[in-house]
Length: 285
Image 1 (tube, rainbow, N blue to C red):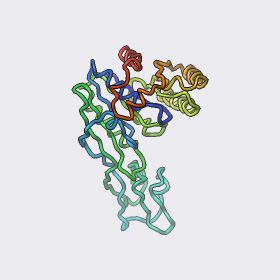
Image 2 (cartoon, rainbow, N blue to C red):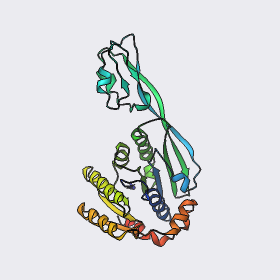
Image 3 (cartoon, rainbow, N blue to C red):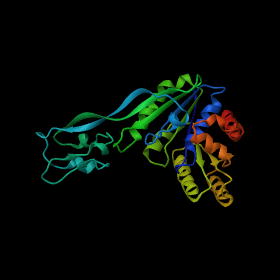
Image 4 (cartoon, helix red, strand yellow):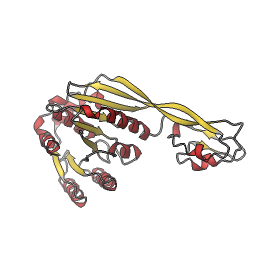
C-alpha cells in the first residue's frame, strides 16, 4: 500500500500547492508518486507544473426531480434540506435551486407521496496528467456556479483509490479551510502536513486545522513556510504546534528564488536544499 499524505492548512496562500508540488517532485526521483489536486474550487497544480491535462471523467450528481401531479405542497422536502436548495411558499409547489443541492436525497426520503424522483447534473470534472514517468497528477475542478465541492473531492478520492496500487506515495493537496471539502480530502490519509506562515491569520488557522485533524484522529505535522518573515509570530506558531503535540518537521525561509520559480512555473529552479529536510522526513515516515 502507498503512503498517503495530505498537504493542508487552514489559511489560503501559505504555500500548500508549492509544498505539494516540491514534495512530489522530490519523491519522484526515487519513487512512483501520484499527486492529487483536491482544491476543486481553484486547482493550480497543473499550472505550476506546466502539465497538459486530459479529461479523465465528468463528475455527476443525483438531484431531485418533482412530479407535481403527486405533490401535495406539504413543504416537508424544504424542511429537511440543510443546503436551502428547496424554497417553499405555503400553497405553492417547491422551487428547486439545483446549484445548492449536494445530492443527499433527504427530500426524496421524507416525501409522503413519493413525488420526488431522480435526475442528474454535472458538477465538475477530473483530469489526468503525466508530469514524468514517475510523477502523475489528477486534478479536480468544480463546474462554475456549483456551490459545494465535497462531492467532487469524493469522486477524486475514489479515482485515486482505483490507481493507488501503481504508486509508492500519494500526495493530496487540499483546499484551504476546514470545511466539508477539506474533511473529504483528509479522510483515510496516513498523516497530514499542515503548512502555515508566521502571520496572525496563519497562527489562528493553524489552530483550526490541528483541531480538525485531532478530531479526525489523523496524525499531523507542521511545516512553517516563510519562517524568517516575523520572529515573534514564528514563536507563536511553535507554541501552537506544541499545544497540539504536532512536530514542526521543516522550516522554509522566505526566499526570492522560490517566488520567482513559482511565478514562472519553473519549480525546478528552487534549490533542493530548501526542502530536502522535508523529503527526508517523509521518506523515513
